[in-house]
Image 1 (spheres, rainbow, N blue to C red):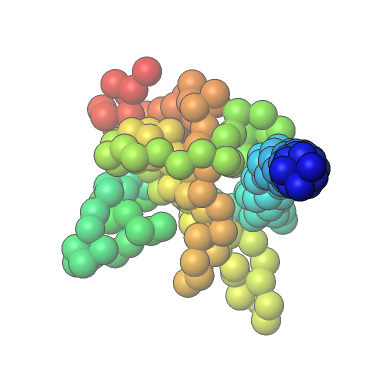
Image 2: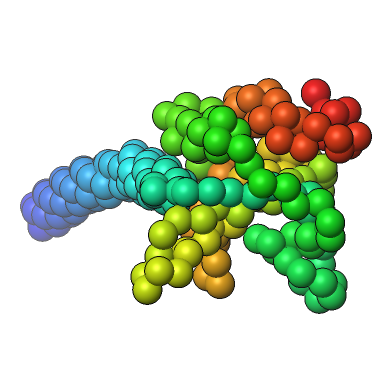
Length: 204
């Protein structure tokens, strides 16, 4: 009789422990699913946040690009070359100026450039390329400034990278974008502005 009672107690204790283990396993599985869901939601949300940041950066670049063409009264165009920062000589937008190449932009050329700069399409503000500088031109745009002085904006069109750099005189770059989709229009503009330049004439 004592043996039977002992077996019953052992059986009940075993069933109780098995039931408790099963309940704990189920609870752990639910917590794991909840954690996995949280991670998945965070990962799904991340591209959206990054996309919003890229969109804001693109908007800022486009705004800066357009703002520097406001109230422009005149401009000049010249040849520049990519160069190391330590290279001696006059610089424009970080590029080395070729002496004796600067020419005034006529009224029609200035109008064409401003239209290209203010276009809604043709630029990609959200990418960065690794490429070597190629045939390049520099542009100086002037507008009325304080105390009857002129304010100047410097532009570089680098056709090796299809890159546009914009900076106010004496300040850091205000815009850095790529014009792959507008390359043909910028090439034609530069060729008309400096028709005697053989390197520009060879661009396609």
